[in-house]
Figure 1 (cartoon, rainbow, N blue to C red):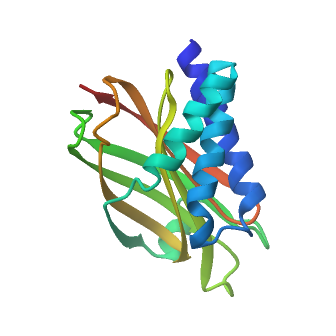
Figure 2: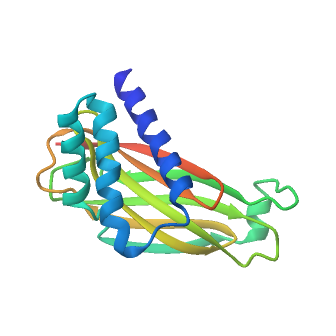
Length: 197
């Protein structure tokens, strides 16, 4: 129960962070944003100043989560409109599936992640600006590692496939990979368990 509440807190913070910072993200600010996210989450989960300091250390020390990323559009706008209804003037963002392989892994080993999502908008919008944020989290330490990137996507359904190495100092634990994707006015979040052995 406590773990579920903690994950809900993380998801809430990601939504708040992404919506509030959608216009402010720049490459040279990402490490600072990671540290800030760590301080916030560490403080909330542990309920004390030491937890906040540890959270900030994790956020700034590990910084980049992604090793390699491959993006592919798998459905056109027309195909996606067969799945979702779109109101006049609406921009729709849907996080559909998230898979992790393997789901049990040792530190310093590589994880492969596939994330599928759909973006739809009025016909005249050729590409949509999106922000992806990826967080590796466990209940005890809070945010263990995180990364974010800004992308421009054509309308339709996309798959983001990426690999990352589990940081060597991460302790054995039940962790959760949380992915949030946002545009200027909405955020979609999806998560999957990952056991560090």
